[in-house]
Length: 153
Image (cartoon, rainbow, N blue to C red; front, top):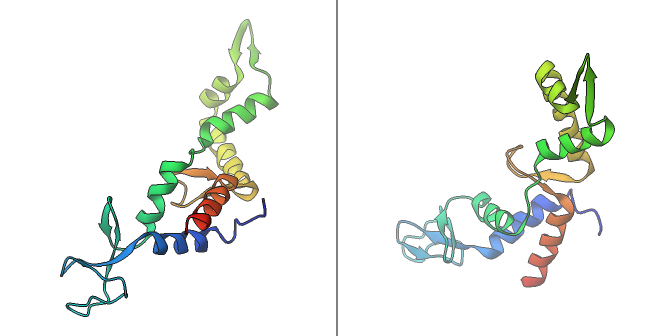
């Protein structure tokens, strides 16, 4: 798969405009030409048949992404990565403790910083976010979805 990461935002916008219909809320009519035929307004919402209408296209993009892609749990994947690197347990005196729990409990700030750095690296290596870090997806899945969208339209 070619690296479309830099093109994904433009492709998603293109998809959103293809998938939705310009809609005049004032007249409550579709305006497929980009201008309402009744009031001649070009301040139009986007209509997604069967779902609804709203200004902008972010919501048009979000719906199929959430529907078709699996979210990446950065906290789970970071913890899994740390478990691969460090032993499962740590000996503290006579106690045998889970290494991850020890780190999280003894230095939560360090854990949080390390996780933030891991997320930054993940973003460089193939994880993508559309909402500034609330949800993450694998760019390879997004690329596949973009190819699906291209073949549908």
